[in-house]
Image 1 (spheres, rainbow, N blue to C red):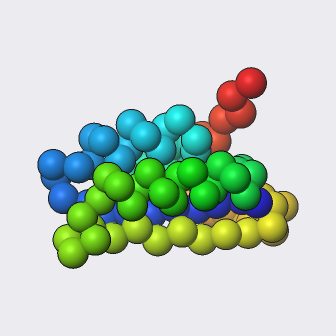
Image 2 (image 1 turned 135 degrees about the vertical axis):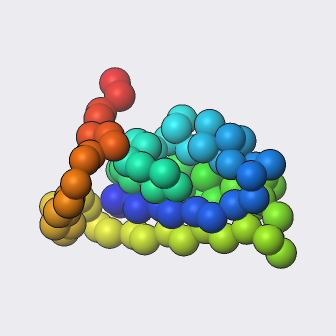
Length: 87
């Protein structure tokens, strides 16, 4: 499945969330990650994020698509990053 994940977390946790997400997803721009994940990887990501964030202060939104073929992306302005495949 293709994931777009956006987050708004307190400054104290931003680096930890970002560093963790870079293991699984592509960084697109500030607070936005996306990429292809298996169901088991997605569960792992959700469980770890629940451990990192403070549910009373932080917010994470996850959009799930069957594949990136279902996504039409348009960028306006500079691109912060391009999706990459890590093998």
